[in-house]
Each structure stands twice: as structure tokens, then as C-alpha cells.
Image (cartoon, rainbow, N blue to C red; front, side, top):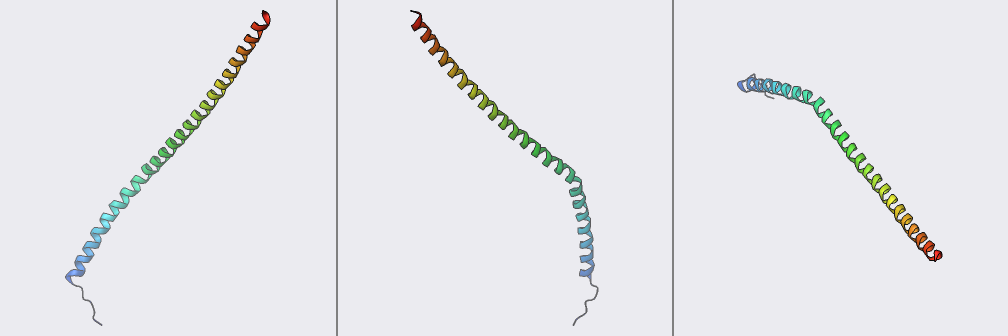
Length: 92
């Protein structure tokens, strides 16, 4: 087996590793700094989606109530018309 002697390439490799470590440190720091912001953004998105869903649900309920009230009004009106007709016929 050959023994590897410290050469110029080994020295360059160590320098390269040190540079990579420094860059990696700054990337790790940037990542750590952005994590809270990312977490807040995720929470904001979840809240917005929940509000949108609740708004849609509320609108659906309001529409159901309105359509139910409209149906009741129509039935009530038709009964009144029928009663009025009946009263007019029997008054003569």
C-alpha cells in the first residue's frame, strides 16, 4: 500500500473544507433566523384558510335561512290569498 504524504492538494482540500464550513455556518444561521418567520407565516395561512372556511360556512347558513324564510313567506302569502278568496266568496 502507498502512504499518502501531505501534499499541496491536501492543503487545498483543508482550505476548501474551511471555506465550506464558513459558508455552511452562514446558511445555517440564515435558516435559523428565518424559521420563526416561516412558522408565523404558516400560522397566518392556516388562520386565513380557517376564516375563509368559516365565512363560506356562515354564508351557506345565511342562504339556508333566507331560502327557508322565503319559502315560509310564499306559503304564508298563498294561504292569505286563499283565505281572502274564500272570505270574498262567502260574503256575497
